[in-house]
Length: 188
Image (cartoon, rainbow, N blue to C red; front, side):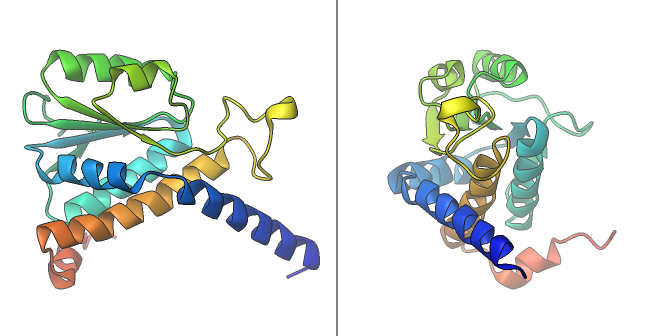
């Protein structure tokens, strides 16, 4: 690996560490409590955030939690006792805002992951997990602080945050690693 690549990795990892160090641990715990107590969990994200959210849904399934992804044919309607987990880094994603309104009207609780505490989405959420990372909403001109392009630091932070949440949820549910592994698909 060349020196320039090594420096880019170091810079990116330092940025990611600084973002995750500022995520509120009490809110992470509250989010995990919401998920464990949910009758049904439904998740959604747009673009590359959707990839992270879908990966988290897979882990929730491995934990034995009832989870679906918005848009899948098997996603049930949401209602009282359910949690809609959505990611909107910029906090203004129109699809996310619409889904949040639908879920709230149906009586579901909304958990938002965002980088923009003042965005429209935060006003619709029951609980907001703020991930203070650069997104496509603020990655141009003098606002640009990340070496990574187009909101990638937010997406990378989502991945690591979700993995930490899986560890916390595993403890909360007393899920055994063997049981989690047994739920992994054999259709690959």
